[in-house]
Amino acid sequence: MTTLLAMVILASTALMLAIHVSAWWLVRSWYGARDSWTGRVLTPIRLLRLEAAYWTLALAAWTLWRSVPMKLLVAVFAALHLAVWMWGELKRREIVASVRSGRPPRYLPAVVTAFDGVETLALLAIGWTAGAFALTG
Image (cartoon, rainbow, N blue to C red; front, side):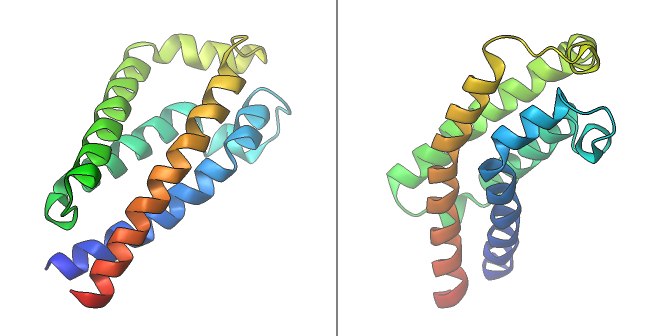
């Protein structure tokens, strides 16, 4: 069962890496062209929900993270993402209005890009650990 969970984490991490590597492009597309498919499919609220689900799954896979630094990494990133997701749900109207206006908050692109760059390193560590566990059991 744990090996299956490691494989699910590994596949989910690949998706999360694709999203995080393209974070700058996603933010730009939300506030750019009106006909962008990202504006309809990968909305900020949906991505916050997806990230919250991923980090909840990472918490559920607690036994995969054998070292204290990995457990700490997962716990800190999960706490941050769950808090941001809750904030996003509470500020949903303002977020949607901001996207529709085409004008992002001044700090948003830089903050999202920087944080997602750091998170990419955490995701690589998680993917590496889950992959090693899936291979060795």
